[in-house]
Length: 257
Image (cartoon, rainbow, N blue to C red):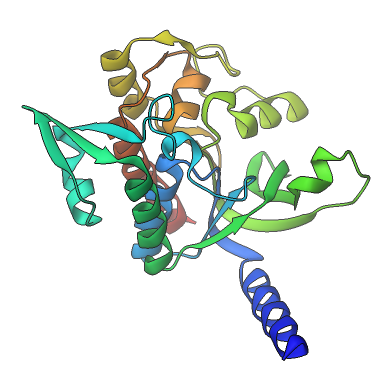
């Protein structure tokens, strides 16, 4: 039995990894915008892998606000909530409360059910960069990087890459720093996140969701971080809408290739 269990996991995992060496979309960061993007891309029939450095993908959504595990979603994002089958209750007119653990688990379930593959404990340490375009991601085990071990990575080739790494905008920073290029941002680089303005932050999260360099897209807090806009705290409607918008933009880019 012990050998059967081990062989089953090894054979299944490596078949899964092998099937993701060439992708339509590589999503870096498993917060709400990244998961929603994965859902809509997979639903459209695209080959999608989401890579998250943590054991449990979901970003900051699990903890709600200060570990009070509820979140707020505004009316504009509720069509996405209803499509994904999440439970909610109305709080005030135009605002709804959702249990954050239920919401995060629900998003992950729906994305994988739609066909997205999720790899946890993966860190993206670089991108594949060819002929002035981002064309994939360079991955390693998170514990390898945390321990500072000199272990070479693997690569996943992808038609599009999404930076959904949140406040740190890690992929955008890497592309600008290592290749000396200008991003489609006010400064040409990562402008940096401003302090909190929840209403403005929600609006600009969606406005700033875009392709910032050929093949490289941003969503969620990474979108506001690269463009120098506001943070917004534990209201998540903008994150959900950003994920849907970026999926639509990426689908157009994939179809154009």
